[in-house]
Image 1 (tube, rainbow, N blue to C red):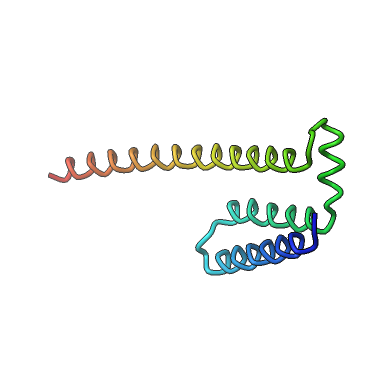
Image 2: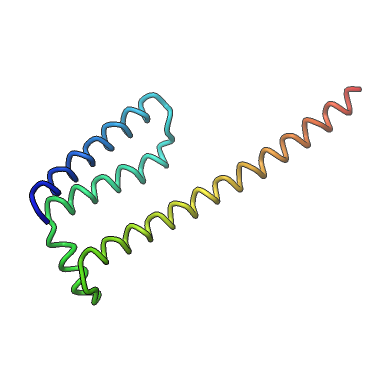
Length: 111
């Protein structure tokens, strides 16, 4: 990994850390969601500072290239994130439906 890529990765990760912390302070982002972004940023900073970790892990797991290992890790992280977001959305939909039905019954009782 060349030095320009490592520096850009560190700068981008630092920017993500800054924006996440700013959104948490303004209460625009939940703490549980911010933990994901903070951990991801820290992992990217570690990968930029110690690129040998990707080479070691890809060799250990039998990948032909560290890039393939990194792409697979990225895909897995995004799939996990998508699943957790879908679970949250389903819960919110169920709560919204229950709330709307309860409110409709309360309105019908008042009439």
